[in-house]
Image (cartoon, rainbow, N blue to C red; front, top):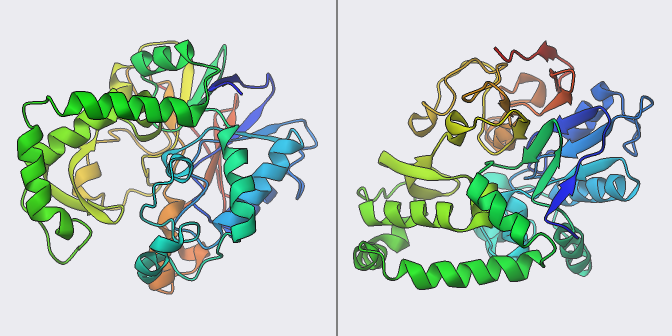
Length: 349
């Protein structure tokens, strides 16, 4: 299968990061007019922007629904960084539903959840291995986190390669080059002193400048990770996100995007209502939440943070009261539909 694949030439409903929120997905599909199997009476198709899994209560059911709708020709998806973690066998925050070694650590925040049955894990991985990193057609591009021309060009040069082999090869190349970086020794010393504290919210480390440089280098030098995680820049101070202390922040690459094709992404935890943004995300979006953004106002992040509903569960906040939403961008109409049934027009100028 190709790493870059073609979008169907029909109206689309592009759904943001689901993160295991099965109920929100079912509600959204209902309001979009889909049957339980993902068929639409007007011939529309579903496109997921990645991060279907982790942190939510039922990642297995979300993936199973997506797989069946995909096999029926009703749905498409690109891989997000959370699917990539599964494929690369990298247990990370919120993946205790799949990785047994994470279950106890993740249970404090994310339980209860449905576990992936052991006898279905291989089948699930095989399905994800067949999915692309990029979907595109003449007027539209879909990628999980970032449209980066240099990374796209490298992907195009290896378009029919096995994703895992390619990712491991680029990992080895990066790991070789990174050891010659001027900050490498400082990074090793920082990790020696503070690595054991980086997943402890109550024990914050100082600003680790070499660790920031390390993470920035890794985010930009590995094409697969760059497209699924985006590129980064140094943070002003340490912050806790995704289960660990971080020292680099996401870089709004869309401010330099000048191509005419629209780009739809997820990943960036946009908020619909203008509530207080964490300090490390204050400058990511400088336009209202229904606006297209970027240099040409033709990039749209459709991730409205439904992955944070685990916080609601801890506070006994019901989904209908939640400030976190699952959204679909209808294209070419450029209309937003939310899992509570609300509809809003987006603005591109």
